[in-house]
Length: 350
Ligand code: NAD
Figure (cartoon, rainbow, N blue to C red):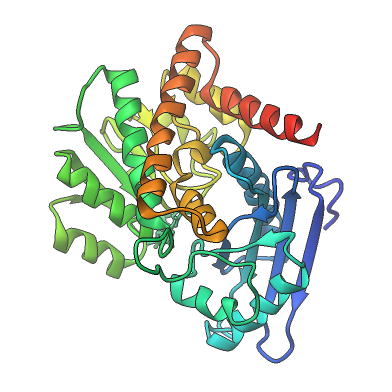
């Protein structure tokens, strides 16, 4: 598979393939941009159908991190890592130590943290081999620990902004929300939505995660094939990307799409399709920046939990501005967000 002519290649600065013989680790790190600082973005551990699928994922995710970090005002460029999971290479301290050595070999051009399939505990082993890692256990009232509650906090505040902009509602009381994926972020988001009086519809392919959510709060369970098309006000994708496509968008009944998953749009044309259907889309990398905000605070070591809470609170204001601009200009929200991100990166390059 060629890289330079790959559909997802976007002038990424560098791409790194790693293999560790003793653990069987296979990983790819993509550094999209270091214009604003070290390329930062989490590590996804996932079973990919092929190396080509892993490459596509890491290229897309790395570019998304550049945009996310830029719009969030962080001193981070964008990068991402994927670990190609398989039965032959189970999670182990040795695997994450080996991965830590890979990250360390990049000399700080890439800073990692946890993403799908990785946890705070895994990052502790990465830390044994490199200082270029964040998302470690929290110490006192400093920023740190599992980023997903912060991602969920940014998401619910973003959902509030979207519900106000699109439905004119002042609160989430009685608002019906479909959450696809009740993992780290999805479960935390459900807790916040339930506390705010929203009516929940949930789905997950992992029955343990689903049970954890439904044991804790009232929620209607929908099959994974139906959750995207639920008759709700808000669809919150919190599983994997590529859920908003030419095939799914015509069947979506929600008036708002606002969730944590990265790369929700399959292609930019899908952002246009949503706008044409008058579905208000909260650009994924704007609404889901809560996690990287705490990761940045922890990495640079100059933030308290209160600072992180205040920074995450600004996500709502950014979204409000994008929604207002979209309303005034008739342009799709993803285009406005992309334009903003690119202008911040271009200014840093100069
Ligand atoms: P996670 O692995 O803890 O949770 C994902 C959940 O989605 C799992 O329970 C999984 O079983 C479920 N799932 C997978 N495919 C599904 C499907 N087709 N239908 C229904 N459920 C499905 O991951 P997470 O950390 O909660 O992240 C969720 C999404 O948010 C990812 O796209 C991630 O990249 C993004 N994100 C996470 C953070 C964070 O702080 N963790 C920050 C920004 C973005």
